[in-house]
Image 1: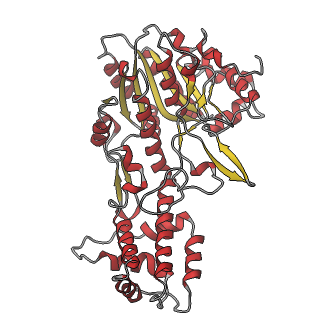
Image 2: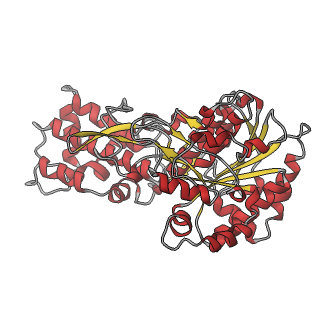
Image 3: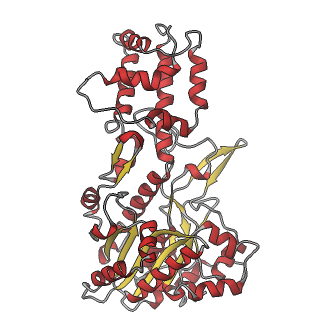
Length: 461
């Protein structure tokens, strides 16, 4: 294969969409941990139909939930609920901190707020505000979450003055007794504490998983020509499905097949999993099951190739074509599409990109670290591209996702563009992925968006 990246390949006979028997629409099942709940067995969760008009009502009905420590629970009923500005009225500790900040900012109430702080002071009176602020800065995210939420839940009480208990628990370790002339310094401590709380919550893996799945699903059902498709949500995590497969998997497969058979228009089926597959035997078994299930449904399964699979089997030093061929022979490769890498779902919160209205907050470092950003499973982008490619007037742009954001930052006094793909593939790597049947997602150094050169099953390499 040539070392040149040819974006026109996506529209030739090797593309999966060119094999589609029914040109009008897909029946798309998105598999993922939509609810975040563990108190209900997956078999008791209904398969939910969804589209652009019913997205928010369905999300409200599923009511994704995230249980934090100390009995604090977040519920998400719309995409806006993932934004930090939505939390200040929902998380009591944040509401109380902001109320305290407001009191300190008002000359009429600042002294009273400071007096409350004094009454709960537990620190060395000789320690100054500057040193305590540095202590907040040095605190790790894990320390912050432990300090804010790590203690056992307090018993419910009708006591109205929650601010006093809040100060004793959160703020007082970083203040001095002499605060009468240092209200602004106290406000700074509160803002730093709140910022660390927000940052810690945004970086939790369970929070990221919920946010990325729902944001990617919203983009999918709002894709052009989405009105011609049928979308369904299957609320099951990868771990739950793996457990079901270990027990035979028949219940899941039979339930899905029965639902597919309700379609009387003969649509092709796409099973789109918010799942990532490593090179382990367990993941291979799950991929085999999903490929077989997709084939039985008359369609394909779309998932993500995990970093370890890419490193060990495709781009790493241990790559062997014979090993990869054997791997493909075990997983129903003709019904499986895997894509790599992940893509950027939203801009990081910050004054220059997406400001938080309630306070000055920066989600990521000045030079962003990969794990600070929100990445999405490329399988959902594959589904969007395949929807576009069913149209007779589809062009090269069907595989270009121009709405995937990028942003710039300063490195060594020069502006640098953060690409929309988590890994910026070079031509050699793209061709290596194509030779294995993996759909490479290509990011750009100088423009917005990402692009697939082609989407095929693993067997069409």
